[in-house]
Image (cartoon, rainbow, N blue to C red):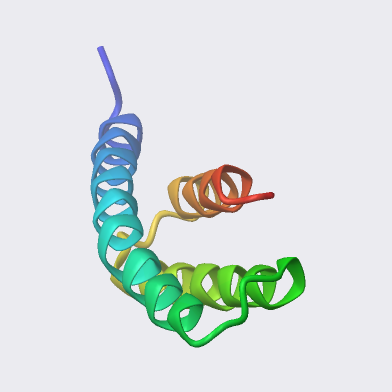
Length: 85
């Protein structure tokens, strides 16, 4: 039988995943697209735009996410890994 703590962690993880997907498809995409439009098509400016968009998305995620340290840290790590170039 799961404990209340385990149940809460499962709910927090599911909610963090949902929010991460939402932030990734809205904040990151919008920020990167806006920055990329004004960048020359070169690696360094595009990487800077990507990094800025990723930091913005992570900040929004951390602000919206359920405050469960394990879930929050795990999802932030996943976002960073998924967007590593």
